[in-house]
Structures are given as structure tokens and as C-alpha cells.
Image (cartoon, rainbow, N blue to C red; front, side):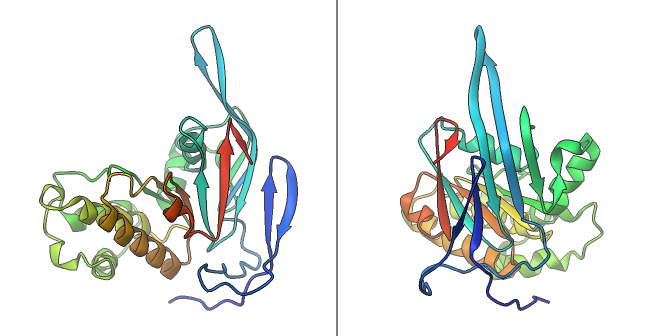
Length: 258
């Protein structure tokens, strides 16, 4: 059952150690206003994160003192040129990689303090991933792919089927990924990211492998279903039209949020 919450106060945004308040002067009909989280922690909190990789004879700094806060129910798009560090920031937010310095918290949980097993559980329960190339297992049916995050949680199988129905894929639950179009595979991937009720959804160029028509339909479904679930969404994209759907957009350039 979905809870009904009152409108939230202006968002508190954190950028590179600074804080500003982003109020709205009038109601917007094109953007969702996230619900008041009350005492709930931020869906994602990145504080003073730095990340570098060894290359050749030295280190290349990819992220430099990056801070970002996303509230429950908020939709944020992350844009920037290729090589600016967008995917690296997404990997840190998803616990796939660890920062050299700084803190990453998901739903109030400090990922840097977790051992590998605990980190895997947090990813499974608290984070949903949507990838550009779908990452579906070809030997599993559509429904089995969606049910993967539920395997260790004891959740009901019909959770997956209900979600597939909402995504318009219920009639193809017994099909295999190789029998689907690109747009259909991405619908399945979105359903998989949402099925466990994760408070944070991370989407890495989810329409980058789709034509214009399918891209628009997939973005409509992604936005609609994330809103329905009450999850926060961080969308990495090069598509200005996709970014414009978000409640706000942040830009990453040369390893810093601008």
C-alpha cells in the first residue's frame, strides 16, 4: 500500500562542500515535487567524494570533492561530457566501486563501512540498477529475470508478475530475452530494478541503445513506475530531452559538480 505524504519543503542541495536551498516560486505542472520524507534519511548522500585511477606513470583524478544529496522520491538527472566521471559516480552510488576519500550513504547506510557480503545485501535490497545494454540473463524467462532480486528475500513471485503487467509485459512473461525487442528488454530491466522496492534507482543511459520512439516510451514507463514506487531516481544521460524530465539536473565537468 502506498503512503500519502504531504508536499515537501524546499530541497537542500549539497554541492562540493557548499549548501544551498532550492525553493520553487510556483507550482510546476511538468515536474514532480517529491514527497516530504519526514525523518527518512536521504535516498543518496555523497559527501566530499574523491576517486582516481592509476594510469601510466601517475594517477588520473576522475572525481574531485563531489557532494550530492537526493531525497526520497526525487528524480535527478546527471549530465556532462564523456569522460567527466558520470559512470564513476554512479558506480560509487551503487556500491560497485569505493571512493578513495569521502562518504557514500544509501538510505542512511554508509557503504564504506560494509564488508563485501553486507554490501551485496544493501545493493540487493536498497538499490535498483537499469543499464544501457539491459544485462538480462538469456537462459531465464522474462519473469525469472525480474524475480532475480527476490531470490534471497523470500518475496512473493506474483510481485514480479504484477509489475510486468504494469509495464505492459505480462503477456510475455514466459518469453526469453532473445525473443524481445530492445524496448521490451529495457522494460523488463526496469521491472527488475523496481521489484524489490529499492528506495534508490540508478539508471545509466537507459535509452542509449534504443530508437527515438522506444526511448520515449521507456522513459515514460521508467518515470511513471519510479513515481508509483516512491523511489528516488538518479539518471545518467546525454539526452537533453531525458534530462529535462527530472526534478533537477546536475552537471559533472572535469570531476566536479557545477
